[in-house]
Image (cartoon, rainbow, N blue to C red):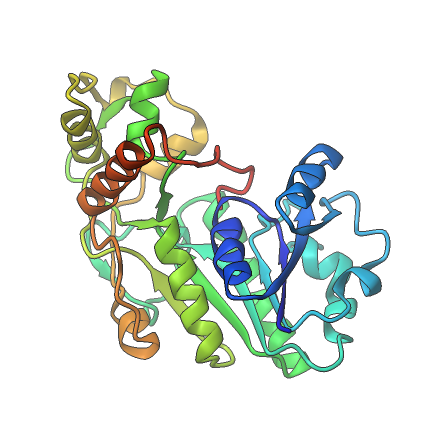
Amino acid sequence: MPRLFCFGLGYSARALARRLMEQGWSVAGTSRTAQKCAALNAEGFDAHLFSDASPMADPATALAGTTHVLSSIAPSRDPDAIDPVLSAHGDALAAIEPRLSWVGYLSTTSVYGDRDGAWTDEQAPLRPTSERGERRVKAERVWQGFGRDNALPVHCFRLAGIYGPGRSAIDQLRSGTARRIDKQGQVFNRIHVDDIATILIASMQRPRAGAVYNCADDEPAPSSDVMAFAAQLLGVEPPPLIPFDEADISPMARGFYSENKRTDNWLMKSELGVSLAYPNYRAGLRAQLSAEQESGGKAAGAPPSRSGL
């Protein structure tokens, strides 16, 4: 039986894990607190405590039988231990027998930095314009080096803005946290959480050591347009536009708005044969609302994780 081990069983990893469990896979992974581990165990996962400061107590036992590994753990601020997973358990991963069939690392499109609205593919030089992007570049390189050094098929997935049930413009409007920031000319891509799972499964079926894939939809768009469309679906007034220069937002959010790019997804489609279920935000939001209406309530979701993945 194939076994997936997810370092960081968060929003994106659980979407993949649930799909694989339906196919008969065994799934294990980590979380940062005992309470979250208990909730994951209740869902049928084999959950283990792990954080930057607290490695797994018995990694050899936890990883035994693993055939596939996914990491969605955010990079550390420690320049000498940029990736918490490899710093703590790289040796244990390399020692798994038989050898791992597939290893995936979830990165972000922030590695490209600001491109002034230009299209960017996987061959573009990495020019991060934020500290977050710089750490992701370093973490990618650490994972790629780990793969080369240990002859393991490591793949990097650069995710655009993740959304889906529980983490969408619809949910923000309902919770009263929605805002429409007006940054003239700024666009970015998104990717639905279910499409992330589809891409990862396709890569598992066609592994290519060292591969890097952009995971993005077909239609980069301003965030204000997405919020306006969600409001239209709900039949409510959209929040008023707030000029970017006047917006009271966090430094992390301000760094996000400093980047403007369009992410090319041709390689993911052509090499992995992926057909996106949600090629744009309209399809994703319509599907969420339709699923909620069919189920008689809000679709199941999850709040953002610390890593954002």
